Length: 264
Image (cartoon, rainbow, N blue to C red; front, side, top):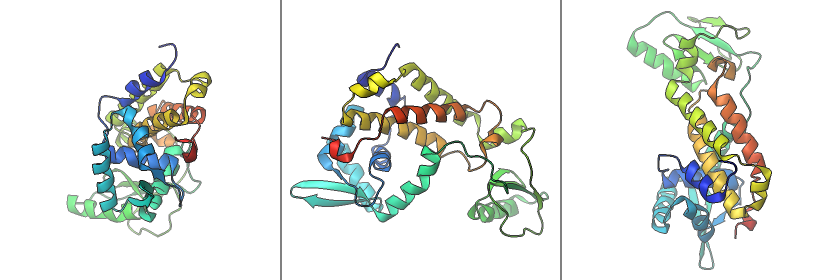
């Protein structure tokens, strides 16, 4: 494919899996209306999602679900419904944004590993849940990683700190398993094949830009949020997510986020 056009980009980014409408709507708001007071009119949301194949009735059902689950609030302006993220929705969206839009996670100077002696399965599960609440990522039984300082003394753990060297396949594979790596690789290929360039980006309407951004962010979000919050170096050399991240961020820069007021 020499260059992208809107319809071919929609088809390519849609992928083989039909996105859940409620999840797609969360992506829309997380990308376009993540600040308190920002809302999107129902008709505009419908036009934004229509090229993806989202029908009005499916959008209504999804919005109803999101309201019931506390993600979305709806108000009326005349006869037009306007939707916005709730306080809960804003908090959840903000928490994920750094991982979605941020650069590769580098090693904190005080990142460390806890190493425990072997234990029973039930005790390991209990320990894993406790440490997860403190921000630790389980690499394998008895080994936990945290990309920040050790704030509490763990009496029965060996604490290791230092430079990242010789990342073994069992560790990188545990942190980023093959199906996830394959997802990054497939998204990279899709974006490369589309060859989105500045000329293409300038020819889009604001609404078309918003739709394409939604699809790109949605596919990227589903992958990157599955990565544990550990330094990218631990995923090993040639990690597929690194190239994919660079492509996504580069394309999102080209497809500049439109103002909600321009989505008409």
